[in-house]
Image (cartoon, rainbow, N blue to C red; front, top):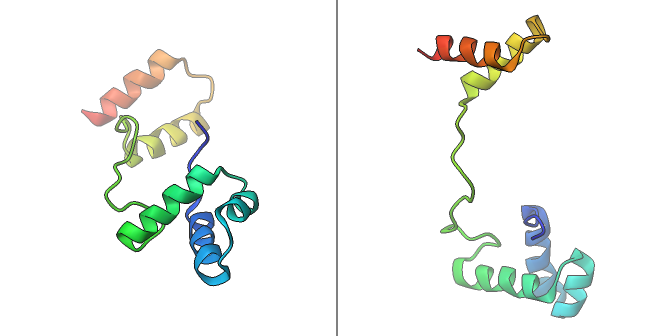
Length: 97
């Protein structure tokens, strides 16, 4: 499955349809996506008044590491880039507790 289209491109798809009255085929060529994707985006705009679905849920797992953990790991790797994974995990657990 290809990645989702950026919001700016989705907004352009709506603009091309509403302001320029381009066909779905022409919009799909401009956006380099399928006609079905164009149809879905325009349907979402019709239903919700915006190019993205405000009711859509984020996909994937929740993040295990928080922002503070990432900052700690970045600093740790700058200080000692030769640490083994188990040592990194131990230090992260010590800081979290």
